[in-house]
Length: 344
Image (cartoon, rainbow, N blue to C red):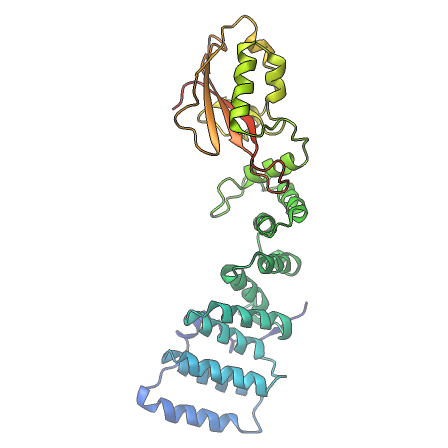
């Protein structure tokens, strides 16, 4: 996509207030009138017209006269539909609406630039790119954000962190109940070389959550229980009967972990598979009659003892399944892991 560079005259709206000359308030009306008279000249080049319009707009900005600014710029665009700088004037209009707190109207103008106005480079940065960045920040609708993220990924790959965008796009697909697209996009996120190390603001467990979602989606899910009570009773019965085969069956087949309390469940060393058989033979296993007091409506802990001479105490960790892709599975319970040792 070839963009027209707007040279040194064009400056970002956010910086504009610091770059134009000032005029005394008493002279503002006369100055604007002079600019209007000059603008009506038939012999102006596009660059000269741009300079005059820009100065008129900045004078209005100095006064924080956003209504007059919006009226002036939108009228100019309407009366000069082929003006090469229209995307810039509409960008200023969108920012003016943001300054007045009218985000839905600002969103309309950012969108209008994308749909119908020529892209321009402002200090080396695409106006369309700037619009997409703003739209993602102010839009409240997942379907809209999905379109904006996809446009950034397809048109501006060199300007963005593609790994972060895949994650955020997948999350918006989930909010919009497009679960097949969410699964595909989470998979793309996991395939990125920096997926395991990237730090994404507001998403500290990005890799863990994406990995669990993808692996769980592709699994049989036949180890889940309809309620916490049924899971607790089944596990206690198996321990009482030293039925290691039943316990192996009840363990989650995806992302099941066994680790100390200060480790991360997605650590490779926490995900090693093992059978309960070697820990039950010859040992006297006991469990608490009630779940640990730290249990919540979505997580529960069952304290058990006697597994070995080194780490006798194990807390069996039960978790409510968060998987709205499948209503039959969503809200069920799984035995998701083991915390070894006393609670920290």
